[in-house]
Length: 339
View (cartoon, rainbow, N blue to C red):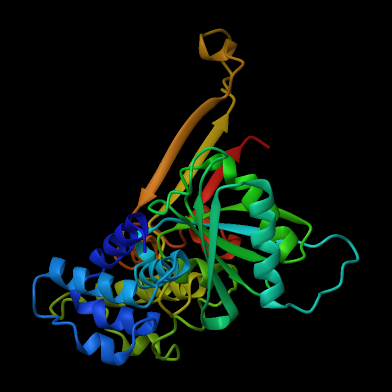
């Protein structure tokens, strides 16, 4: 093992948190149980890493072995990346082909390596027929940068792929070509949907959020829920508040459902509109360019926050469709223009 590969192993192992170390290493399954038992995991982390790198060298580990370990680490910490969604489509009259995962991998890798001399591509099969792809990009004159890889998660026999945001935007067309050809599609487009939470993005595009995210009984009657009213209030006020709260609760449930929402951190709206006025003259009236405005809603859990606005009395029910349509439209980037 040369020094470059040893350093790659060292830095990859070093970033694994100690509470997860054994779980990640056993998932990797490159070092045997007997080898792992020879390592003292109670010593300083630097010493543990050094011992593990020596074991990797003893097993004649390759660059692909190191890349596989990095994929596993990323699977455990997928929320540390920002994921974009790409949607593919087949040409008119194209039937659904039988999917061969090995053929997909081979085709994907060949397309990238034919177009770019310096690139390394690694794969790992995962749950729900998904394939995790790690791509370390280089250039015609520079070796692949193993410390800034791009990731792609493709679910077989679906038109969707999820990619981690890459600094090398110039490689996106090549990546799109490799995905469409290898998966036997015709076109690919980037959706206006982005988040750190890969599982939530998957739930949105596959319309699974009203099933896999459900955690409690949705048949509980509104009367059984606490309305938080002061028992000393006038009975007429209590009745009016109760009726209104039940209306708000019902409208909110009809829009958002009675299950946890997919997790998104923001929604962004770009507005473009021409200035309109009944008055003649003025600087804005002569302006040909449209007025532009950007509004961004941010929250650690945006959809749950929106769901809670009306019941909390912060907003009227129902909320604007521009806010409530996010899961159904599968987008959190919107452009609003004059009709």
